[in-house]
Length: 250
Image 1 (cartoon, rainbow, N blue to C red):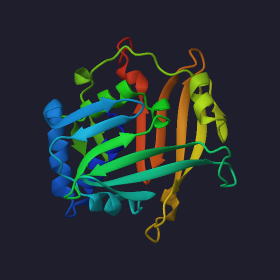
Image 2: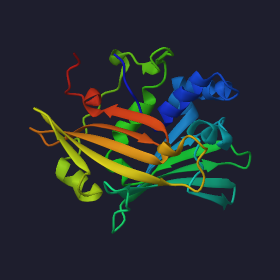
Image 3: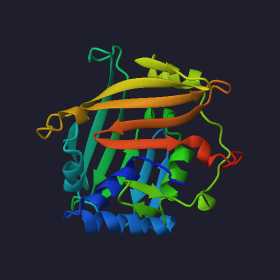
């Protein structure tokens, strides 16, 4: 079973495929996933934070991959914090007022190595914490398919959870009305556009500032079943039903 997984996973995998100087560091992080609790910790408050116990990747690795500078680069007591801020826009590219936005923060130590990665509360409306955590844990031991640019995980080894999926009304209450709705026989796909606030984009990669998010709702249950998007040039797709304890795999 081929499973597409979240932002940190996609970043690691994309770096694995580059064959550049960042390959070794990315592969080392991938190997750390085999012993998740030894190498990582997860903290959930109003945000979701993945902590790196043995930091490997540098800040320059992220810019090399995304071609985008962060929205904010702030000094901290023990390093730096990068924030990538995404603001909702309308069909004409204008910012929505009042503002609807989410962010992801990268925390680096004094050696400029990534020590923590946080996702804001609005992002968790479309990527619930427990589903995000089990997605991350499932990376360990996944097979790398370089030809198809995918990670293949053994479905028999995936952890199942019994949490309820978010309902459409709750998600829309936070994200507002979508740019477009695609009506299908058994599901609806809500499409949103968010624009990355960044002061520098590498020439030729300007389109990466636009982030399209597709959220799928089951018509019968009104539950959020899938999220797909592109965040700062990184493609993310999560099928939440794959992780439900009561869900039967094909």
